[in-house]
Length: 153
Length: 297
Image (tube, each protein chain N blue to C red):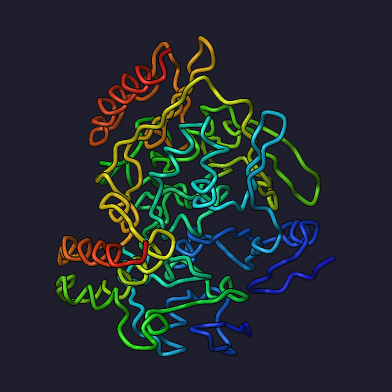
């Protein structure tokens, strides 16, 4: 089917299968391989992208359903260089292998957008859909909390 | 009347959507989080996906002491309506524990109620199990650690957190199809699958949920669940209890292939368990005890 997708503020005309997942279209059709596919069933969050500003699993979203919405991938988030959140990930050693990191950053970006100064409990509840098999959770938690502390009151 | 095209359609009126859904092979889609997983595993025939997102079926409104929740209201929308839903404690507790923020941003109320089982034989592309149309419930001859406690043709465990909370709160569902609308108790939406109807929901072909209605709130309610971890996981056993005056309604998931209304006199009745799943009886008994203590006056 023909489809128009708005990704990182750019309009793309695509011809795809009607059952294609957004994650596959982003990676294979648009070359936006920052979005990772881990479990492929919504459990790990490596595929997180923003749709109209809210974090979603792009492995469980049909690309067709994203038409008419604004999709932002990790490439769009860091278009102007590493964001303060990404710099905090580096400063807090919030990754090891890095496979989950794009999804972690996307989910944390969405979390901080609605809750600029989250508590530890807010961070844990808000990031529960993002797994890190390396166990970098303490660093991820510190990175997000660090942003919260420097955010304007 | 809309012509059914193979593939994906996004109707803009309910009438058009119901006409499309009346045609063979059409499947409704809310957020698609369950459907996308099923498509990925090749489960079920999906000729045409009818995306309901443009129908304005979402939203929560209070009217005359009741609360009406539109079918495509997301689970995040429910949590954003804490004020209106506060009297229905069990529903808010169940929603907060369901899935993850990423999934709650997309997953809808109707989709949560109609989601397919997580049984690994049903989901596994290697098998066509009894529920999927085959002749064997592989769980009964294989690994059924997380499965149901009832005897029967399919021992899968129902995964919805919302269903027991809504059923305990006496919710009804409004159904629509090209042939008309009807209003039933949510508890009656579910039926145990039979040899000729391998479906857990009693929907006619082409029929969809339009809304869920909560009557006046219970005096108190609670949702308790045991999962594999405190965060995001499907319920191993989930139990909602709601007290309406002297009477307590209890509904459990994870113990049968549909949400299971418990008999207050003998909550474990009919839930004898299977060799690897009998441990859930202990968990359920504990959740019953705790929930009754919580909702007591």
